[in-house]
Length: 265
Length: 71
View 1 (cartoon, rainbow over the protein chains, first blue to last red):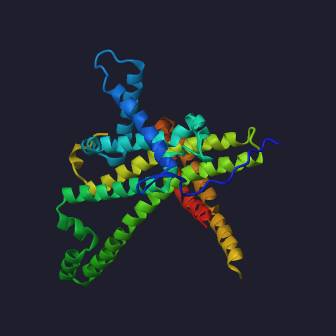
View 2: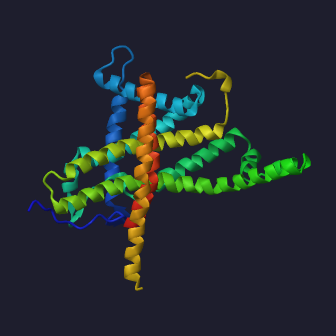
View 3: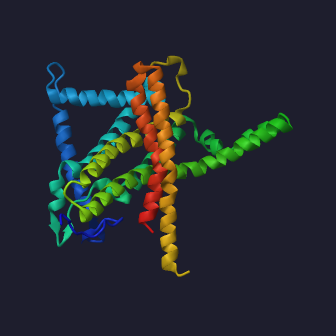
């Protein structure tokens, strides 16, 4: 009794239909819904007044302050942080809303189209998280190329001139330069590992949460899934913050010690 | 060994690989409480850092879980 039957959640999203050659999955429809919500939010934000703020404006401005403080703590100096705050703030907001919509409005899972659920959480699809992670890592590389010129950027990974300079200084420093060169080549692998780890962390948390709730519903649906839903909601919020702060820390690693003389905290 | 039972063994190994996050996160939480006990004024600043650290440590277990579900 109190059991709700259902088939376990599939890793790939279910395809609802086709537009030409492009498959439309149920995560895409949820993404459209998220975009409508963001549109409304941004229209409301564009009407903020400077002098007499309402309650909503104060909440949004406090969120902005919180994100700015987090990024300033991670990067270290506040000028570079101010440059990256629009990007990372939007990222955090996007992932936060995508993770929480299906918990705040569970009525959305009731709409079905030919037996398949019409809406599924947008970050529950591996395509979304891989696209976000890949885009962010490519962006960090572009920042690095823009800050240093492209040769300095390539010679961070393939450290040929450093090895030559090390061997000119003696055999000992030559071998140290060789070890650094090996670490530089491993850095290329670590960039790919960053893409995989960023995407899998976000996707894994979201997917495991929904799957666990589905499985518990087939066992005893009355009160048992409640702690799991709470845990999944909390981990959705935390994973959004972690994603944003990791992107900020990668950016902070790329810009180096720029402006260490203006250390404000 | 037929492929079906080999697949089940692989799934079991994936779940066993998640074993190590329990002592790791417990140690992290213990060190966090130590630090808060030494200097209670830093509690707000430490809290978000500890949560981020726990999420990062948890990520290996999440990779193993995803591997379990795609087997």
